[in-house]
Length: 551
Image (cartoon, rainbow, N blue to C red; front, side, top):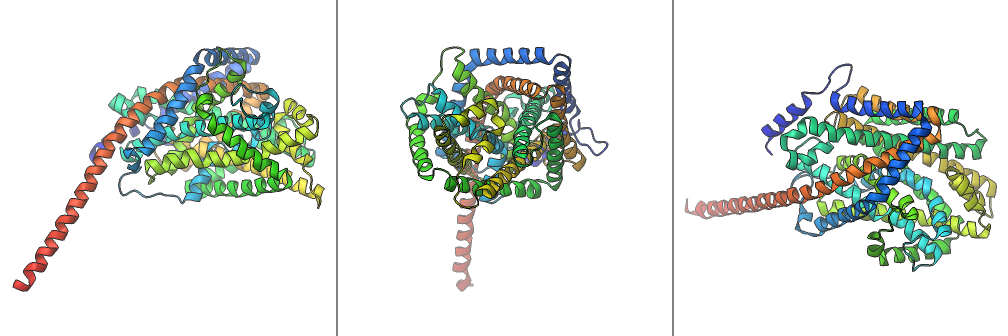
């Protein structure tokens, strides 16, 4: 796509933006998303019980009738990503032949994990393995209970979510950097909709993406402050209450706003790297203080069970409305798919210069393996402690999930400075939860800002501040309306967006393969032309050398 055509396309989209009061945003997308958010908040305010019932019924209907779509489509996304990586298309470089990475590997991986699921790993690493160990899920049935529980947890946090993220991030980055379209979800539909992506069709796609991002971030922020509140309650006796959680949201939002204003290269990058360093220290300490030998053996056994039964478990579809699969696997897949526009957009923004092969393998394998190590360290420790305490830890998790991590830390044994070490670990855990939340919030604000500005990478600072504050405001409003019940209703509503996104991503897979195939032919032609020009230059130099003595 030549420069003139790119300019024309941008003018079609960006000419519709509102450019006053320090803002630069598409009014249709911004107001459309705002209207949907307002309607949901009003519905929850007027009758929270009815709103919860409606969204719960919608969730049950989607999970019961469309579970096969979530399962098969998520497997398709993994297959498409892997096939593209290991085929000749894997040599295509995001951004063109001469593009080079904007970030080093450590910074890149840090931002991938922090934005992708860092806070989720903090919240579920203790609780989920315990649930599966006690309930014996219907997948990975040939392993003993602990290995089966961990393999099931791997299944929910491994290749499937990262395969979904890899596909949408690859599509977004390819159409933005190779096809020179705006970095927005609408751009991946250019092969199908052509110039209509710059009109109402594109606006509808972006509205859905903004709503999913804002609702998902507000849900995570609202539910996550409960874990922070639990940590502060353990450490300092601070009361667990809505008032405390609102104050925490304000503090996290303020920190995220500072990071957003600092930009991607400073705020988000620095915080992400800090997250990974703190998480590594935290994990190593728990590994040493916990049942080290047991954790290592459990990791090996669980990874073996996961890989050995991967295909069978990945394509397992239970009876219609199956309670366990609907509550866990299908719920997770729907959540990852609905969450994918946010994470995919962020990954796309930081991945220019990577080849498709490097991109897919890095996005799918590195975060998955690191997540497995984290989950086994904390989940294995929790399983062992629960067995030694006759199920006491599981009882706590069942009644108060946000406190699971801090409850587990109280059971760790240390021969030296036992009380001090537990306190330090609780402080580190609380700081890590806060840091991961700030990173999710600031990266989410950048993504929503990108979408609402029509795909611009550099928008005005006041607009970044606006969206950062909007995330916190939504979470606060819902907490005040109905506390945890309102946030869970919102989370249920987010799952509803997973269904249209599953269909959207399936169509996107087809368009991506065709577009990358064309780009590969073009890239191959460019390389052949470069080689031909080099040969011609060499030939001309040889001719000059031969003519020189004769002259």
